[in-house]
Image (cartoon, rainbow, N blue to C red; front, side, top):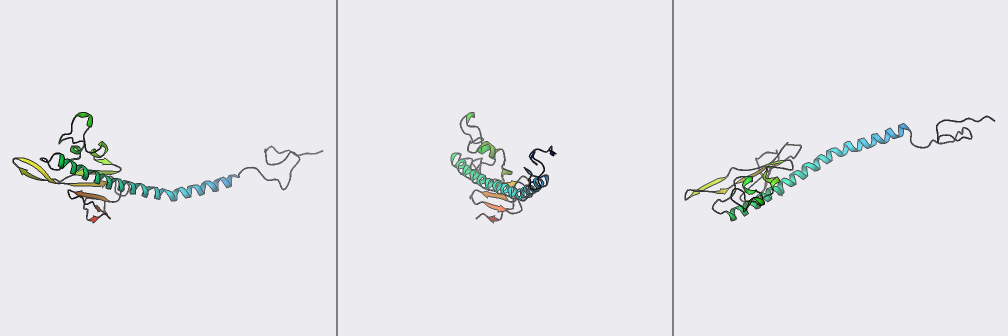
Length: 181
């Protein structure tokens, strides 16, 4: 009795070779095709993910400008002789350091008072001042938010002032002429 045995387990039976026997598992070619399809799908998804990140950063910048504007209104009513704050650090401060002061009003969180948040750079200025009885009072301000890297962290720049209207600069700078809708 002549029997042939193959040393590849699972491919042929010990009873001999059969023409209809099917191999178990996947061939190398099938695995390579699946990997190629997965890579193509990932490459198509990467630009979408980048666009979503920029959109999230822009939304965060708009909300941060609104928070700064609200803090400015609160600052102006809390310290009326000073008017508006002319720096982000004046709107911030640590509550553990004592009561609020005009230099550290404790109205904004530290991540925003640092001037950088969610891929945007925030600044306040220039401020308009009026001098009454030898005391300077800030009567106006402008807050701006520009992307750290235009096209990567955001596409548009944003601006607001003491009137609270937020406008955008499509080029990513501080020439804000388009109203947000």
